Structures are given as C-alpha cells and as structure tokens.
Length: 121
Image (cartoon, rainbow, N blue to C red):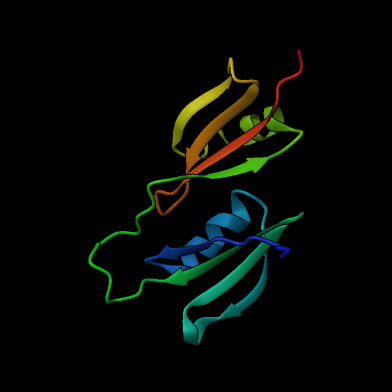
C-alpha cells in the first residue's frame, strides 16, 4: 500500500488571519479557499497545509497540538535570517549532536514549526 502525500489540517480561531500569516511570513500561496466551510489550502514548493476554523464541539478553547511540524530545507540559515525578528522563536538556530541544524518558531495559532537540514560535517 502506497501513500501519495501528507497535508496537515490545522485548526484556527481566525481563518483569514492565519491565511495572511502563512502568506506574508512563510511565503505560502493560497491554493483553495472555501470561506463558507471555513477551510483553506496553501502551498509552498512541495509543502501543502490546510487550515480550518474551529470545530465548536471541541473541549479546548484554543487550537491544541502536542507535537510539531518539521520543514526540511537546504536553506535553513536563510530561513532563520528571514524569520528570527518577525515571529516568536521557540529555540534559535543551532547544530545539534544528532546531526541536524535547526530552529523552531511559533505560528499565529501557537503551533510549533521547526525548520532544519542535515548538518554537514
């Protein structure tokens, strides 16, 4: 059995502000938008993210995720320079002993976004 893609669907309190954040901060392009359904799809290069408005039946008042989203890039230093003064930084750019050069930020909804590349020895 083969999988042909993976696209997280992130819950948001404000769909239009989240779309704007992903466009202006990370350079995503709006691919599809169904405002009546509270849903949008954004793409950048080979990455697709879907956004949806809150499902009112949820128990939590804010969007919740205990994990993170990891973006692989060959230009992690350039991403760091472009983002470090614009967004909340979870941890700064560093090369780690497990072989990755990476940093992490928070998006407008509080989701943890990590950017990394395999470190060159």
